[in-house]
Amino acid sequence: MPSPTTLFDKLWDRHVVWEDEIAGTLLYIDRHFLHEGSRNAFGVLKRTNLPVRRPDLTVGTADHYAPTESRTTETIQNKFQRDAIIDLRKNADQAGIRLYDLDDPLQGIVHVIGPELGLSQPGLTVICGDSHTATHGALGALAFGVGASQVAHALATQTLWQKKPKQMRVRVDGDLRPGVSAKDVILALIARIGAAGGTGYAIEYVGQTIERLSLEGRMTICNMTIEAGSRFGLVAPDEVTFAYLKGRPFSPAKDEWEKSVSNWRELKTDEDAKFDREVALRADCLDPMMTWGTSPEDAISVNDRVPDPALFEDPARRKSKLKALQYMGLEPGTRMYEIAFDRVFIGSCTNSRIEDLREVAQVVQGKRAAIPAIVVPGSMSVRRAAEQEGLDRIFREAGMDWRMSGCSACAAMNGDDAPEGARCASTTNRNFEGRQGIGVRTHLVSPAMAASIALHGRAVDIWGK
Image (cartoon, rainbow, N blue to C red; front, side, top):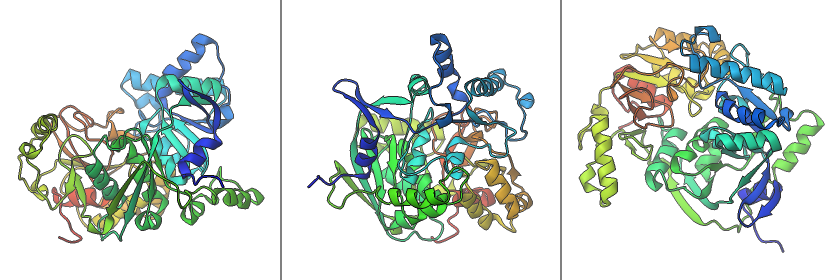
C-alpha cells in the first residue's frame, strides 16, 4: 500500500520535471501572473534573445502603480511608475500575453483577479513576482511568490527550480464571534508562532473554522501566510471552492466542469499523512485583533494593552520591540482602544473583495466617519458589484473616499501614501516602518474593525467587550 500523503505532496509530485540533489526540484508551472514588477525579467529575456515560452499560460495586470483616481497613465506624475506600466503594456503586447490594463473592465490586483476570473484553480502551480501569491493556495493550488530572476526563468522555460519545504498543519476550530473574521484568525496565528514561525514550511489550514469560511476568507488567511515566514498556504478544495469557481470566465465549462470537479475532489490530505509540525488554534476565543508594533506578529486583541518590551526574555527581541514602540509612538500598558487614529485605508490583496466591502458597509451604514478613510476595491469587477449593491453610496454618505482598483496605500507605490507621521488603521498585510509613507504608523486590522475605527477614530469593539 502506498504511504499516506499530504495535499502539498500530491500537488508537488504532479509537477516534478526533474530532481537534482543540489538544485532541488524542477517544477512545471501551470499559471504565471505578471504585474509592473516584471520589467526587469523581460529585460533579461531581451538581452539573452529568449522568447516567452508559453504566453498562453501567462497573464498580466497593472496593479502596484495603478492610479486609483483615474484609469490613464497620463495622470501618473511619477515617471518611474508611469514607465513601469507602459513597459508592461509593451512587453505583454510583444510576447502575446493577455493583459488587464488600466482601462480594462476586468483590471485589478493580481491576487484578486486570478481567482475571480477562474484563472486560479485547484491542482495548478501558480507563481507571480509577488510574495503574496500564496493567496491562490486557498483554492487548492500550489502557489508561491518568486523573485525577478525566477520570473525570467519561468517566462523562458515554464519551469522553476525549488527546494521542497517541510510541512505544517494548522487546525482552526470553533465559531467566530460577531466582529471577528478571517483576518483576525491569521493575525492571531502569526502572533502565536511568530513572523518566522512558518519559515521552511508549507502550511495547510484545516478545521471547522476553515471549512466554514467563504473562499474570500480562506484567501485572506493564505494571503498572509508569507507574514508567518511561509511561502505556501493551502486549503483543500471542497464544495465552497467549487461553488466559487463555477461559471467564472476561465473555469472549465459544460462536460469539462464535472470532469474537473471529479479530479479536484482527489486533492486532499490522506487521513494518516504525517506533518513535520502541528499547530492548533481556537477561533471561538478570539477578539478583533490589531497590531501594535512594526511586524504582523505584534498582534493582540483590541481589548488588551500594549505589551512591555522589558518583559521579553530574548535580548534581541526585547531590543527590536522597544524600537518598534518608539517608532509607533506608543507606551507600554496603553489600552489598544485608547489609541487615536488619523486615517483609515480599506483595500489590498488581503481585504478588498466584495465580502470585505460588505462588512465595511454594514458597520458604517447611516453613520459618518470621524477621520479620513479611503476604500479601494481589489478589482474593477468588485467595484461594479459594490456599486450594483449600493455599497458605494453607503461609503460616500459616510464621508469615505471611494476609489478605483489597485494596490494603492498597501505599499504606497502609486502615490496613495499617508502624510508623514500619520497613524493609519489598515486592512493590508504589512506594517513595517515606512510601508505606507515616511514615518507612517500602520496598524493592521480587519475590514470591520477598520470601519469601526473610521467612525470613532479609535478601535472600538462594537460587537462585544
